[in-house]
Length: 169
Image (cartoon, rainbow, N blue to C red; front, top):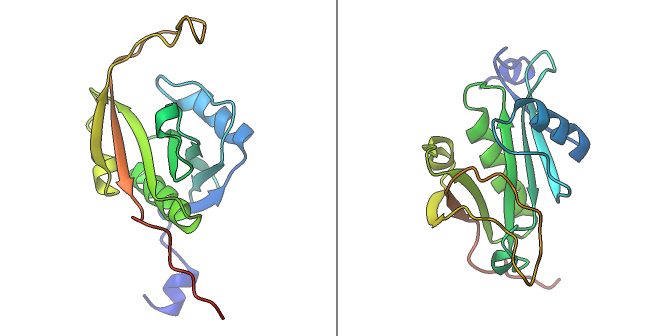
């Protein structure tokens, strides 16, 4: 790529940009097929086009499943696009780079079992488990019933196998 090309990216290029939880949740409310906004997060990323139009968002946070919340794992809680080509894969890869830079060892996310996971495969995620959809209400932890949307596939990508070695000055 020439210096001029770097200064003038193609018109269809998407740019990664941080986004607030409120703005990401508003986007999800408008565009996501089945999931609702999330109450909290660690960070959120977005993709904008050359005209500064928001095309996709991703929200990360602690794993929802308590047994996976080991301080080394981050979950992509929501990822939503307006259908812009390659936006999903770009956001998945950006979340992985960000998580790795922050020291996380593993990143996970879920899709409905009827979804292909093509964007996740493109971002080097592998299917790790099938999760049966069920109500979350239990005697030890009462919760309101929710609408069941179907079984899910948990996807994961290993970011690093151990903490980086520290060097002393």
